[in-house]
Length: 345
Image: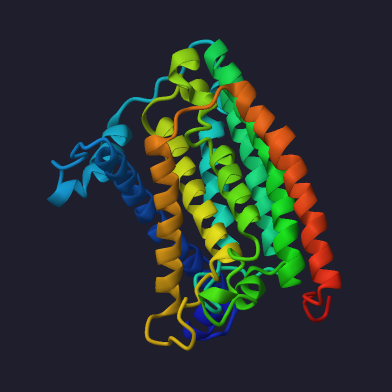
């Protein structure tokens, strides 16, 4: 995307290249922020529909501007910092969480050549950046100088680290089939219709990845770090105004990121489910698949009860870890001895 914009701007000089980089970042970041606002709205609407309520319906037509009104309210509120808090780290933590949630999108391809950076190790980049997200939560829990916040941060750190191990093994299974760490190559390996998507041969892995993504993003039924009954609001308990909003926006940006990763790894990315379909642009299919992933996240939140913390950790270490490791061995054997090893591997 950067090279295309550089050519569009004239293609001469370091300054124009810098402008092309900024334009590419804004082309992804601004629509993402708007998408996060509407994701909050649709999350509330889906939850309300399952409970047979109306949900947001006052601000704007059909309540579509409710998220923007909530954002304006948080922006105008005072930022309250506890007297015993470490002020610098307290304010730095939500900024770090929000920034990491945004920069993960740098390698997400929405269509052929439509990514800020088409890294050859794109999948490793996402895994590395998502692993850094735990630091913002730990910093917020420690800097708040509150028992509730600190316990919530410890819970979240243990939860995210536990399920990242399973996600790593899931990624290995996909890489065995695709033969590349490049996200665009993984998508192109699934071209040719819905029957070529990895969600069929890797169905058990798809389920493990989806459930692990719920735990990784602290979504119900794994929202133990902010369980209201024990921890009030977990690591966010002392936050208000825009500091709280940054945590909130970062969480939904991560949910959309996980939906995009699922679309890339298992649903063919920007490729149409219909072979030979050139009518609908690729990025439209990508957005629809991201929307489908988010819908599944919202539905799970609406009707699955919260786990106990010991159940959460048992599921991660005693069920998903051995299962994902066994599937790595199984799919590797199929790829090598079944003749499905990608060319060049």
